[in-house]
Length: 266
Ligand SMILES: [Zn+2]
Image 1 (tube, rainbow, N blue to C red):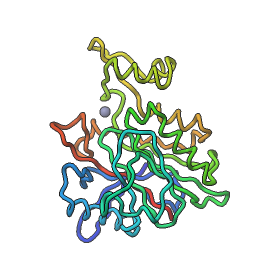
Image 2 (image 1 turned 180 degrees about the vertical axis):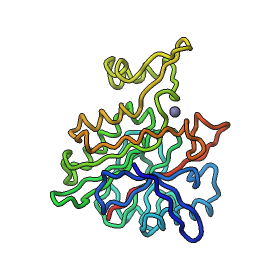
Image 3 (image 1 turned 45 degrees about the horizontal axis):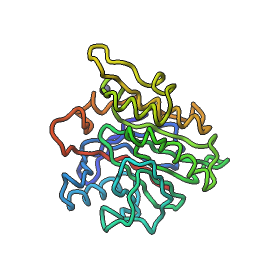
Image 4 (image 1 turned 45 degrees about the vertical axis):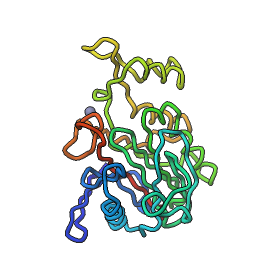
């Protein structure tokens, strides 16, 4: 994981990227310097911010796809025809993950404490053949959206052994306190063994627990055949680092800002 700081048109742009991704795969997990929450930001600011990330990652803003997120496990194949939906024109769909094989298409997911995951698949020569972006909140994690993304990448030519994944800034286990209803959802969705593996009781509060979303998503990728060395867990907590990231848990009243994570199909 590497922190990048660029100056574009006199403005500082900060993002984090994975150093295990292939060189042709431009991507970035951006910070709270730019807010992408449509509930909070006027549309001219949102448009400006889309253009800033397009400039930082060198893609045409008209190829940007990032629609309304609904905490589902729905991952869509998208392309140029979907470019600009939601931010620049109405979208005819909502979802929480995307896969594309179309050059110039950029995929974006918004998050505050939820887990952003960027993926890319390469061919035998190490060239990118598809990319994916996933918004894995706890609901999406319980519904296994990471698995859905890998399956969809494989349906367009990827093999799991040649998929790279980066699990970006999101809430850590210590900060992610949950109640019994959360534990019950994990039990129903992933089984009792998942509760034992990913959830620990709070040290000082009755009926409270702490859940490890990073390991839940990492293990889902491993279960699909993605190799351990190809999964980059950044280990950056949004809630522990509210100086640099928006955090639902770590900040005051809603609506909160949301940062964006973007990957570009070369
Ligand atoms: Zn934390």
